Image 1 (cartoon, rainbow, N blue to C red):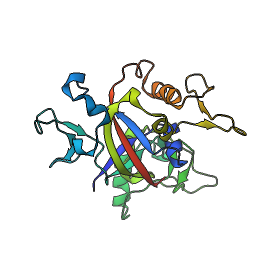
Image 2 (image 1 turned 60 degrees about the vertical axis):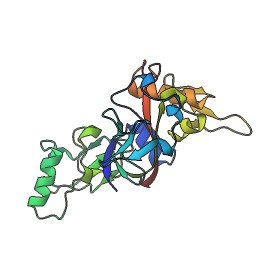
Image 3 (image 1 turned 180 degrees about the vertical axis):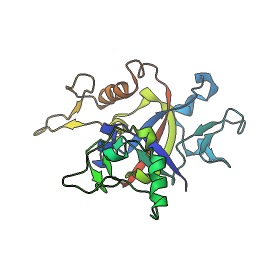
Image 4 (image 1 turned 90 degrees about the vertical axis):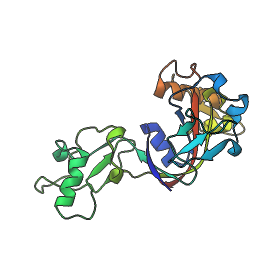
Length: 241
């Protein structure tokens, strides 16, 4: 079992914490030509994969593993993914990098790094105490914004178990998978059809795939859906929200 980081935007952090998100799609890098793979690649089954001697999952064509084998950077079923998300330390730690904060903890004799943390997605706070400043009345003040890419493992609260990995075209997503991606539903009364959030207008749509399209474009740019890239589809189970 291997642990790997995976970044999430604030809406997707909330979706997985609320139990709405059990899938995530990540663009395959680098992309490859459509004729480089058999037609059935978009619906590849477990028989189309094999685990290499390296960390990760590779797809190999009928000729065996070649130099152009495709590696999934998000691991194999059974691996763990820890969530990187936006956060803040207290203001008195603004001048320190996460690495330096960890060093200060170890120098002070702590068994492992820690810091007061405020998670941006929902404002949840952990170890929210005064640290390098003198004790005073009132709550510690949140410090500068820190993007997900700078979150160290010791500061992460979310942990997922990879249940499945496959590859497909972005636009091949099913309605069920669009819902599993964490799109938001409006509460409906009676037998009314469910409505899903339109992330581009703030309104609603009856089509979950279109809802997911607007979410994808919000995160990846207005032309990203039309590009229809190959994506890794990672199905997971939340271990720690």
